[in-house]
Image (cartoon, rainbow, N blue to C red; front, side, top):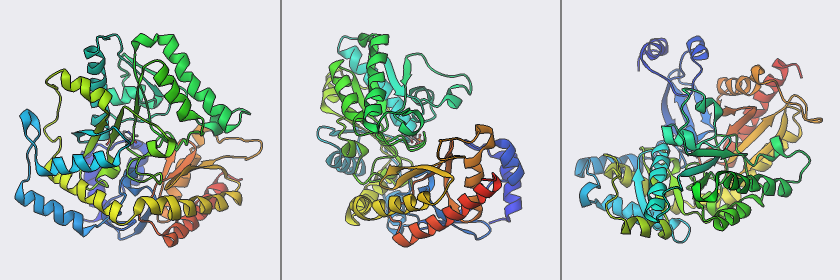
Length: 452
Ligand code: PLP
């Protein structure tokens, strides 16, 4: 590749970045990543970085899997493209749909393909509204999501989500979307036990349904564990109560599995971990480990039967069920299954990861809480643990920490006041040890910078 400065200069001139602060980017220049193997990526200067985020929570099977590139190459030669419009299929679409249906919770047997999590969620808004129209209840239009929920960047997905900085960008919230509180015990628990708080947070749904009028509500959407909102792992009382409320008012339940799906929580799907029985389940990321863009929506019989009776579904994308992406996703699922990665997360590396992070946190004054499950975690940074005192947002302590970690060879993410980690499912105990050593150094440097 060209030298880094030349690439950075072209990048600055022509490439519009996602979710990057333009001032910081202009100062430092883009980080140019050129290679990946296992849990590591390399930048253009040859620096090796432990990828504690698996890209964007997606590279489940790790980088550089020869079998996936071989399958992509073979499929491109055999049939590079075909679509699923007007009654066509390819063997790759059919095989993948069947494979996903076998893994999803009971009854979610009908698979619709899309190309990104955002598209999958956008699709769900259309499917659900059509479902209610066909049921003779066209007023059931409103979706209820959660503060700090993330469901993507298209107009519908932004509106489903509860990221205020995204709503405020244009401003661009669509009508027909409402939000309730998130179940973040550490931020909002206020003297309640986790279980008490879980019930309180779930009952906000009932209040919102009554405020809007049940006949106007189409569905509730939530990530089993909220990822981009800061790894908000719900109290055990939360999802059963949400489910009870959805049933009581006949509200459809959508579990967004884009991050949780394909093993990250130690189950194939987060819904299985938390005992959720969704009517619809969008998934992406781990579906192909990010090797190619592909997403899917698993649709339960209740919704599918009505849609199917309703005739032609006027919906779909040129690349829905792209044969190369389907072939790669199918092989990716085989790797996850054959290498026992889900069990490994649940029984071995997941518990080791959390135990190691907790040990680090116990001895570090900068960490107020470690939360998460399986191979997803957040370390919430605080000025003081007791009484709990947060940094002022403008201090950007988590961003400072993230930059220090990057400079020291560990990729992590800063979300609000937390450092978030979501490594590939193939991470070893030795790599977790390396991650924790680097975290300790990064936390020490941040503590020193903020004179703690
Ligand atoms: N849903 C969740 C839970 C996500 O975390 C994301 C992306 O991070 C999305 C949806 C959107 O997916 P995509 O970026 O593929 O559009």
